[in-house]
Amino acid sequence: MLLTPRRRASIAAAAAVAALTGALAAPATAAPGTLADGVAPGGEVSAQAAGVRQAVVNAAKAYLGTPYKLEYGWTCGTARVDCECLNRHAIWDGTKAATGRGLQLNYWLQGQINQGRRTTSPRPGDLIFWDTDPNDGIRYGGDLDHTGIYIGNGQAIDANAYYGRVKYDTVILGGTERDPIYVDVLTPNGY
Image (cartoon, rainbow, N blue to C red; front, side, top):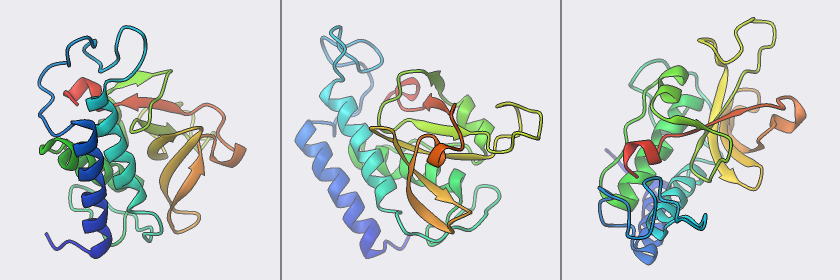
């Protein structure tokens, strides 16, 4: 794969974060003193889990400004992305940079939800999903409309068709979506 200067910088930044946090070792088991989800008994996230999550956020940030293009299937590119494609690239690039092994997400929204577990306590690097069509009659069923990467502090990064690019957004999409769902795909898949 041809790496653009922006992607090279993103990968280098994620690798630097991972090196600083000691996250380059493969996370086959939880670190001593942590629970299986990377959270220590006192509630703090292990350095390794935090490094992976920060690498995913950095990978998502590397796509800011990338033009939006609706894609179908497994073959989405990196020059233009839709929301599912952005998730796939951010999770793969971030986990690969931080641990040396990338996590491959499904290409459609419901498949991405099924790869993780829903959470009411989102952490940076979790996926966020919105049902932006209240008239379809399927609340978070098989007709989800939009997704992105949660980056913390009520913020997300999404490939937004309305604006035509990857951009920062609020978790409530500027007030239009008050109840998104969050899915942790990192912890259940060993990161």
